[in-house]
Amino acid sequence: MIIKSAEFTVSNTKISKLPPCVLPEYAFIGRSNVGKSSLINMLTGVKGLAKTSQKPGKTQLINHFLINKDWYLVDLPGYGYARSSKSNRLEWAKFIKNYLEKRESLQCVFVLVDSRLEPQKIDIEFCCYLGERGIPFILIFTKADKNGVTKAQKNMALFRKELLKYFEEIPQMLLTSAETKFGKDQVLMFIEEVNQTFEVPEIAKTEE
Ligand code: GTP
Ligand code: MG
Image (tube, rainbow, N blue to C red; front, side, top):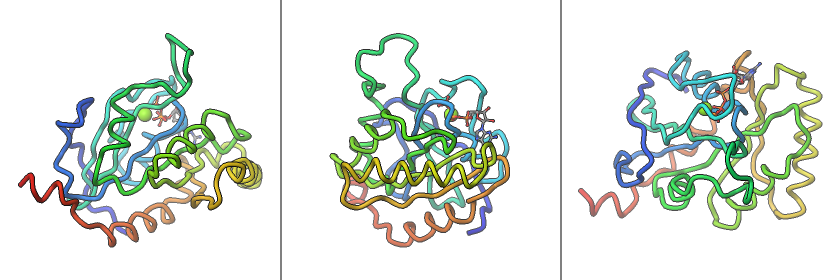
């Protein structure tokens, strides 16, 4: 798929203020600093479209980016970075959970995982959370350039094995690098395929 346009639309914490749910959208989630915003910039080919930082906790809101005037990429704040409390590792902003559970036009969640690391409990827990609620997701392993593809694939296999403890069917797994653009076509092809199956949710029709 060729990206002809990519534009920032809106930042939000309130799901009532999101754009109407008439276009398919894909949300990026994962631990802080895993490379969600960088991947959005890599896929769209627009540097600086989504704000990135070396420090975790950069993205704080739900950010919609309209692509080819036809679908949205959604950048979300990361989990696992709590300066305040560590009481519940998955109890991060309610508005994100609300978004993930209620957004009718959300076609698939991209769970980003650092390809340099062996499976982390918080990522497995997050996959289980999505699985329990029936929210469709795939796994995107990031930073493939840092430790090399072989090491990354080894960690992907370990992740798969860990997930098999909880899932009968393992979601698709892709390997990417925002630095070298590795995996770009695969992610865009996935989106293109899912876009073709999109139907405007009933709720959006009645809102008009
Ligand atoms: P939060 O918004 O804080 O949750 O982080 P994020 O997941 O959006 O991460 P972000 O895209 O801001 O990237 C974090 C850091 O990792 C930045 O310094 C990026 O340059 C770096 N980074 C992201 N992706 C890659 C990659 O594929 N390769 C390399 N080498 N560095 C990357
Ligand atoms: Mg970010």
